[in-house]
Image (cartoon, rainbow, N blue to C red; front, side):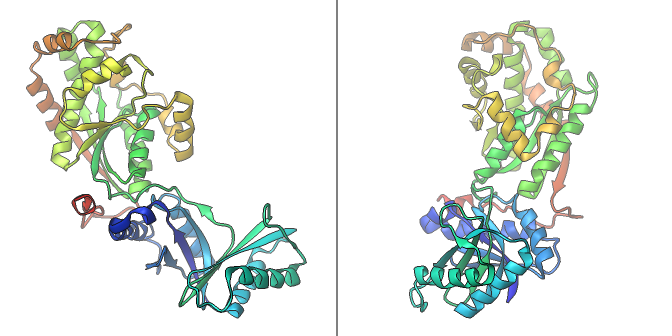
Length: 408
């Protein structure tokens, strides 16, 4: 009998002929997530993955790490045993001793993955249920049990574990290509980046700041947010772009109602330049339709016009309370609400236009040296790398792009 963590996936199982590529990336991400946990190994089996552990304490540490691995449907600390009735009974008895406290009701959830097992799933449930009743005196409750005991019988081995822990779901980070996320430091953009990761994207971050016109607090917040989000993708890069001088050029040329849209268009152009250098195929923003003046349909259209990249807006249909709940769930909310002054508070008009026409914006931008401003933004950016678990050096890209193989 060995201790392990049993990992189940769901959406990956629906990928047909591309499934091996998704599974390979999930296996790679699991290995990275537990890379500094001593003496653990990831094994791929039919329909599940196994992380062998030294003991229950180490399994608990691994389970903590798996809460941040996209692609997992659920996971549980388990005993890995031979696929026999006696081995299952022995493992159940050991689990009951480890759990310690009593329970008034239970159910057995047994599955056999091959038909040659001597008992059907129903017979296995009944046999193990009687065994637990004899040991504990608890009653069987199939609908609302206080404890569920899971048993899985595979051709060459079996697993016994108690209640499963839901995983984050989604797709393994690294299977959907690279994107660049515009990170403001507010509540919305970290959630947007997290949702892009959940769909398998590896995210590079760009934060626009207005130092020295404003304090460097927004840069510190951006670093804290990227450090937090790196737990979900294991390696991140952050570009800090000084935007104050660019804003100053806009203020000298563009009337107040149009400045916000011009700022956003310049940010999109600069982020596109950074995207090209990083092999990214799309931009990600935290915009939600109608939330502020720059996020009306008309103004979003004006922003989209300036880049040849797809702009993804994962929050477009969410309201503020939904976004806040998501931020609280992933742990970014407390960082995002720390007071700071970012570029959005500098040179911003009191009454920005909610609908800028194409001819208007083109005429206003013709007064600016756009190529110079964009080049200055890209070339003056400071770059910071993050990793989790922390590593002294990155010897390889942990998310070597497989997108061309997955989506030929």
